[in-house]
Length: 148
Image (cartoon, rainbow, N blue to C red; front, side, top):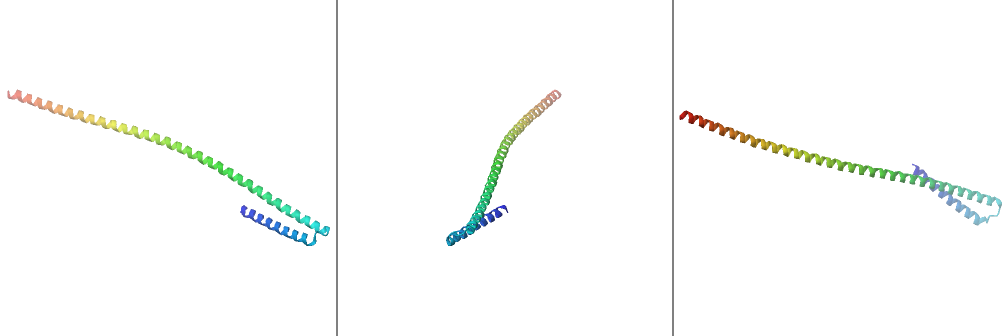
């Protein structure tokens, strides 16, 4: 909305300046400034032109300051976003490393548990075999004693 008003003021000021310039030029060429009244009118027209130009300059200065302010705000936002991105990236890398270590530790624990289970199974098989062999040997001894 402000930019529409600014462009309207700029176009109006430029149009007024052009009209005043042509009117002043035509008047000056036609009458060659014959009277003091015409001179005063020309001075008044120049004063109007100067005030229009001053307003135009003021509008341009205000617009320039506003654009610089907007640019500074955007730069600050960009720096903030970049800093946030770098922080998130660092946090993500830290979490990924921690997760990797946790997964590796979990895998090692599972492998140790499997090794213990295999060792226990082997131990159980040996115990069963020894128990069966002892039972068989004892049975043979009893049979030998009975039959003998």
